[in-house]
Length: 117
Picture 1: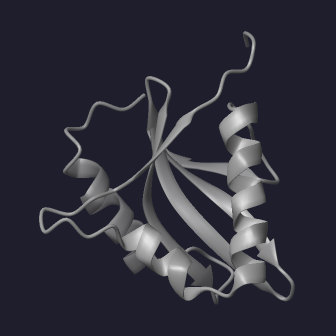
Picture 2 (picture 1 turned 60 degrees about the vertical axis):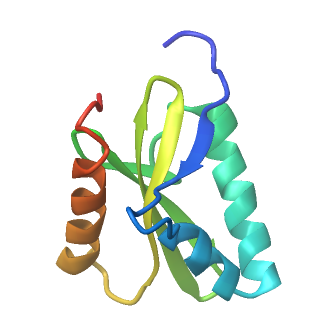
């Protein structure tokens, strides 16, 4: 691996102009947003990273694993050519990432044109 560089963060934007991950983040309390922001920054400046903070789900799709006290948050993202696109964010309530949350992220990733590593 070469020298680390900073990934640019982009929020997935729907055809209607909505940014679901940004909207989800805004609904969380200030302390949760602060922790999530710090973990995002770690990924941004330390990419590529692995467990425990980042886990590859499948080709082109990763999750940031964020501990919020007794809760766990996930942000599913794709990364390509120095840009990480936040596809979906949620508070995890089960051991396994719910299939529906994966489906949402994959559908959003597909609308980006499929140019992922």
